[in-house]
Length: 222
Image 1 (cartoon, rainbow, N blue to C red):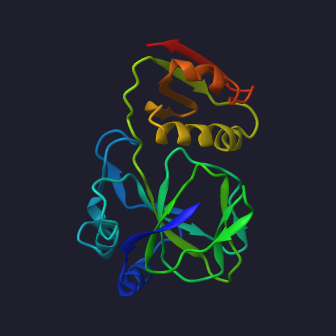
Image 2 (cartoon, helix red, strand yellow):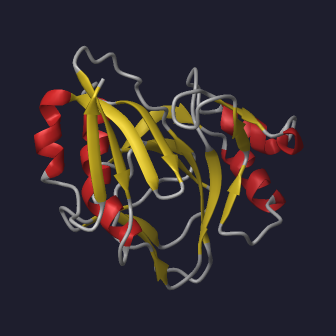
């Protein structure tokens, strides 16, 4: 589920960043979109330019990346089971008894301080904090592939019903993540509870079997 990358971070940088973090917000976004949320690279926010946070983010030496957030997980807390359409890079900002949880294999994964990790978020997962201090991670979205599809259909899904976000993230997100990796998805957008994207027309029947019955599902051939 997670793989250590070749991108190494000086521990002094991590310590300086952790000591400078002044907010208790659940999520703090360091950058802003330059165009499409999921497909175009993000630029650092003005308030973080020429700061330790910009320096820390540049240690992830990739040409383009998406949203970068510092995410806090309080003690005695975990996330509900979910997957994500976009894979993530993770950088721990502290040591502690906190883990990423692979819910397919029921395995716990730790992230060693000083390394960026690549996370396959098509797998149902969670995170848990067993320690006595909050867990802080710098989490960066990987951009989606805007695949070229010769015979495509436009899909619209209206997400509704009880526990709709949970149902979307545990059923559709794994499917969409794999479709993206297999170059069978483009033009993905989210607007409130309406999700739209293009997939090969041949995949429509397969997708219909995944969509929760409470959701409204429509499609039209492009």
